[in-house]
Image 1 (cartoon, rainbow, N blue to C red):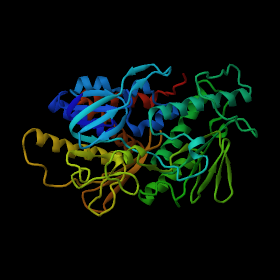
Image 2 (image 1 turned 30 degrees about the vertical axis):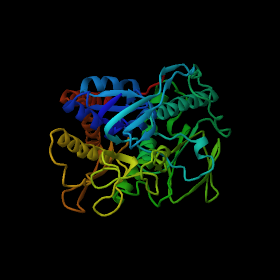
Image 3 (image 1 turned 60 degrees about the vertical axis):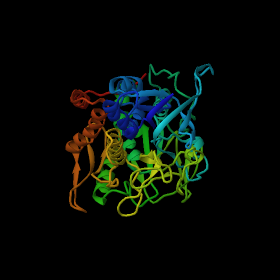
Image 4 (image 1 turned 135 degrees about the vertical axis):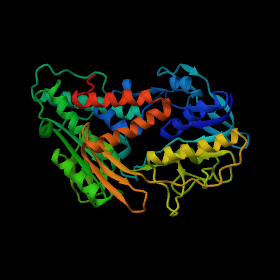
Length: 448
């Protein structure tokens, strides 16, 4: 197989680039390689985990997107790169019974874009990798949802709820707390992912109690603790946003502990540096990310943190024609600091590379101006009806605090903009907005 432009990684940035290029250049020139069959906007994974978003409704098939947007899709994971030969290796695909569906393949390219994202950084904490779930992909979110369902079922049975039945498809979980019926959830990391998951879980717990677990009291029996090492949650955001988020969490009976360092994680509890033990039936790790280990094996220059080193034009240093974007790329901003690993950065970088490749296709000179990251602010979701955040103005240092339903509409608009980018139609955005408005008045928790 061969393509003029090969994009590895169908996350927010990689997929948007593939769709926009495909609509301009066609499947003979644009190829997307990804190890999964479906795409879900990563900021929505906390909703999938809580059960308030159905992956079967939200997931977008890469094959469907390829057909509708005019690019070629290759199913499989990148395993090796021969940069001088302009060739990469895509792993074989096999069933759970180890029956080979697709063989290992070689893909040739003229230009390559690496957009393979990031993975969890456990910082050497004992037990973190073995006893936590990180929301890096849809399968992680689904594993959390099924585990939570089983725990809720056990708690309901322990309280004598009639009609409670086991969720047979859920993976094995540790026994429920021996001291009292209920579920103890510990979330490690008070960034956007941890905060959003905590809020979404509290909202979902009320719906679960009303639809199938009537003997459970949501705020009493579903106990949520958020642990953060910094002095405040949402540390990178303005203090007003952090304070508003803390107030919203406390109003939802979510215990927030800041300035604490997790030192060990066991099957049934989390230990901090102060010697405190927090009971835990399920633990979510949202305390940090790092570059995938694969990057160090590709023969490309990597930084201390493992990301690919790129220049101002997002080209991997010393390798013309090979680019990187998103979390896997170390891109320095105008201030000399790394561009933050955020969805808006990947979106902007995808648009920058879009112009790079379109200019090449048209025989024009390369872009003279380097990529410049623009921070347009941040929004944090607090369930289906509220959000909080800050919007950056055009003047340096100017920002506006937003919260409530207006902020929620803005948060939703980011999701709609992503859908419009990958589907290329305004109709999709309108349908998604209608879905959001319906969801505001109709409780949805996926129970099966």
